[in-house]
Picture 1 (cartoon, rainbow, N blue to C red):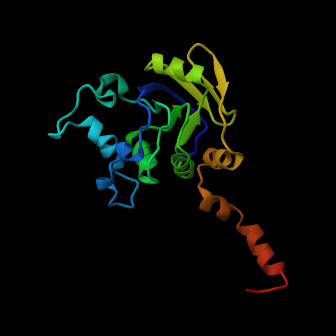
Picture 2 (cartoon, one colour):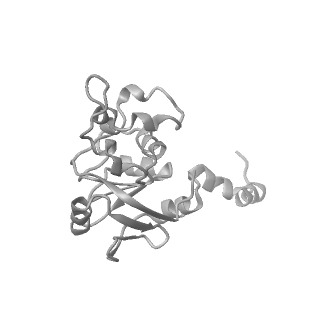
Length: 194
């Protein structure tokens, strides 16, 4: 997992409310346990028409979307069923964070465990981002701060454990592995054995 410290990027804006995990990556592409290669299926049914041709009107198919690492989504982003493939697909496509006023809990937990940063901001900040697609913003995870291109900065919430894991580029297992010496010491010193 790649460590996250500072993300500086232009934004891609998808203002649609209730983007669910099946829109992020349709269920028919969930036949793999590998994180790699899922980016090509990201928003598949929105990026392509019924004939499998590129939908030129879809935001990710626009030239300005190329290279953007921050997605600004509508309210209730990531709702629907639990699937780790959704943050995997976003990461594999090149996104590192999503910003919205509300992000579904299950999607948030899956994202944080897999190195993708879900950021909840206030309505005014969100409205500014929606109205200015392509704005370059900076996300400072250590400071829990999102800064707009005019210098306006807002704090965003994230639990301390997830923040520390993302800053180190580790998941929950990686955190436990860092505690190996303490675990072994406890195992040796305890009076009872399993």
